Image (cartoon, rainbow, N blue to C red; front, side, top):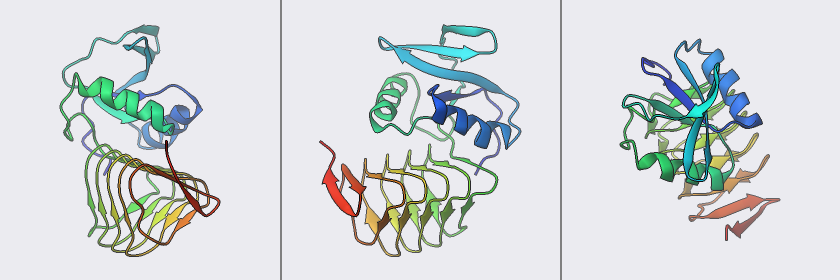
Length: 193
């Protein structure tokens, strides 16, 4: 999935998780045209690069990786940059760590992030902007909507459908369908209010 990165690519976020994304995606894939880390302050974007921090100038051909696991911050970045960039693979590529695996029979939208040792099995359909953290797995014949976060070591069992804006906490295994805006933690599903 990580190929043809010809344009400057930026990580949206600057915390420890963004550093993890930088190492697992940018460094591990030897991407040479990294533009920097982007933060939002008072609804203005700033780029932190080799020369320090400066106002982001929204280059027309930029590409982005959502580099935060925090659902609130992910939504803020998404909403902000959607005002400047079209929702397409040219600006929002799918990115994978070299040791992740996506089945050739799976279908994947845009803006998805697959970190180290993630596994997407056969016939899985995945929407946009899903985050699969280290050691997550999705079994066969599953369907994921958009903007879901699978924390490290979480799994989705076979034939399960998960809708949008859900969070599976570390180590959780989902055995049945999940509606939108839920958190699965300690084996219990909570509404994400």
